[in-house]
Image (cartoon, rainbow, N blue to C red; front, side, top):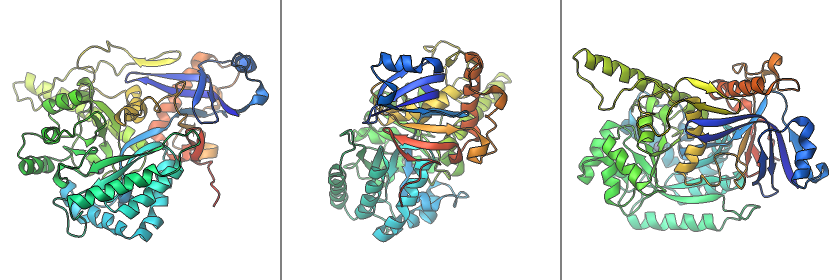
Length: 501
Ligand SMILES: [Zn+2]
C-alpha cells in the first residue's frame, strides 16, 4: 500500500532556489520511492487528486501533517568519523596534528577490541540518525572486525555510505596497518562483507563501501578514493615535503586519485589553481566548518569553490567537529561565509587606502543577500551565470539548504536518488515540528497560533510562515524538533521513533 503525505514541504531546487509548498501531496510507494508529487492541493481536493492517480482513499495510508510540522529532505553528512564520536568535545585547544596524536588516535585505537565496538557503535549510529542524517559518509577505524560491526548497524539503519579507513604511514605504532598488503586484504574483506549483506525491500543496495586513505600523510598511493585535503597549514607543508609536490591537490592527482566519486574533506587551504584542478576532475568537497573553527584550521572559501564549479556538501567531521548534527554545519557555514565577506570588504578598503590586500580574490559587494520571498519559489536575485556570484558572499538560506541536501548528494554521486523530493527518488525525509509544546525546544519560536496553516489562511501568508519555520529550524532547531527520520519510506529514527527493544 502506498503512503501519501499531505502538508507543508520544503524542496531544494538549486544553489539559489528552493520551493516552500504549504499544501503539497507526496505519494510514496511500498518500496519507499516517490511515485508522484503534486505541489499545491487544496484540502477539499484531496480525493480528486487521488482519483486522478487512480487511487481510492481506501487504497492508501494518508498522513496529514499537524499544524507546525513540515517535511524536508533528509540531511547528508559527507564526512564523519564514527570511531571518533566517543571523543566529542575534547581537545579543541589543540590544532590538527597535535589533536590527532593526543586525543584521536588513542580513541580510535580502542576499536581493536570488537566488544568495545559492539558497545559503542549502536549509540553512535543512533545519535547520528536522530540528528536528521539520512545519508552519511562514515570513516571507520582501521580495524576490520570493528568496521564490520559498524557496517551491520548502518545497514540496518538505512541508506548510508560506509568508509573504511586506511593508514600505513606516519602513524603511532599501536594504530597503523602493518603493510599495504594487509590494508588491501582487510579492505577487500570488508567490501565482501558489505556486498553479502541482505538487500533492502526495494532490492536496492543501501550501503556502499568506499576506499579511504585517511589523508595523504597516512596513505600509500596504492590505496585511495575518499580522504582529507588541505585542512591545516602544517599538514599542507608536511604533505608537500613528503610527496615532493607543489600542492596537496597535485599530490592526489599525481596518483589519479581525483575522480568524480572522490570526496575531499575540508579544503580550507586550497589555492584557486587547486580548485580549478578539482573542478576539472569532478571531485567534491565536504565543507566542515565546525571542525575548521574548533581545531583553528581556518575557513574554507566555499563561495569560490562553487564559482569554480566544484561540488560542495557539508560534513560534521566528528570529532574534529563537536556536533554530530548537520544543523551545526549549516549554522557555522553561514557564519564562516559572513566572516569571509567581512574580511573581503576590509581587504578592499585596505587596498583603496593604499594598504596591501591580503586576498587574491575579488571582494565584490553582497549582491544576493536580498531575498525575494516568492509565492512558492524562494530564490535570490541575480544572474546565475554571472561569474563570482558566490565568492566572498554570505551564503543564503537557499544555498545552505542545498549544501546540506542536494549538494551533499552530488558529492556522494547520489543526486539521482536522494537530496530532494522528485518522482523516482527515494523518499528520504525529515518530519520537522516547530511547536514548542510537543518538542520541548523553546528556542524555535516558529509556531505562531495566529498564522496557523489552516483553512482560510492565504497561500501567500502560509508560504511565508513556512519559509520562516525553515530558517528558524536551521538556526534554532535540534534533534528535539525532528519527529521522524525517514529513509526510503521507512521511519528509522527521530523523536517519535521507538524501536522494539
Ligand atoms: Zn575528518
